[in-house]
Length: 259
Image: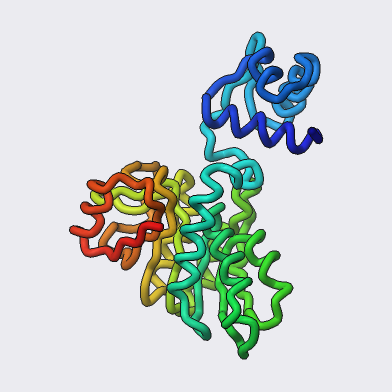
C-alpha cells in the first residue's frame, strides 16, 4: 500500500471512529506499528489529526479534513445521487455548482452525458469550486464561469467579497447545493459561514434549487444556514434515507427523489 493510500485509509478510519490507537490501525492496514507511528506523526505535522499517547484523535471536527480525504465516504450513494441530479439538468441551461464531494460527482456525471457532447455551449457551469472548474475546463462544449475569491484548502471553494461580486451580476437556471446538513425544519446548512454565504447567494440567483445529499446528511443541523427548506425545489438522496424524514421534506413542498 502506498503512503498516500495509507494516509487516506487512516483519515477515513479516524473520521469514522473519532480516535485510533497505533496497534489497532496497524492491524487494520496490515502494516507495522512503526509505520503507523510515523504516519501519525507526519499527519499531525500537517494538522490533519492530533497525536495522543499511543494513537491519534480527530483534529477539531471531521469536516476540516481536506476534500480529497472524504471522497471515498458514501461513494456509491454519492454517485447514484449525482447521476440523478445530472439527469434533471437540460442542455443549454446555466448551472451553479457549489463545492463538495457530491457536487463534484454531479460535475463528472454531466461531463459524460451523451447529449452534452456538443453545443454552444452545451451547458454554462458557474462554480466557486476550483476542483470542479479544473475537471470541466477541458471540455470545450462547456462554458465555465469561476466566481473568484479566496480559496479554502479544505474544500477547494472560493469565498469572500470577490466571489460575491461575480454572483451578484449573473442569473442561473438551477443551483445544485452540496450540504453538510439538511433538516426539514432548519433548512440546508454548512459548517463554515463564509461557504454558506456564497452558497446562499448562488441559490438566490437561481430559478430553481436542487439539494444533492446522501442520506447521512439528512435530519442533521450544522452551524451556518444556507437557506430555508422552502427555498429548495428538489431533494435528491439515496434509498437508505429514513422514510419519515423524506415524508417531512415532501410535506414542506419539495420534490423528493431517492435513488
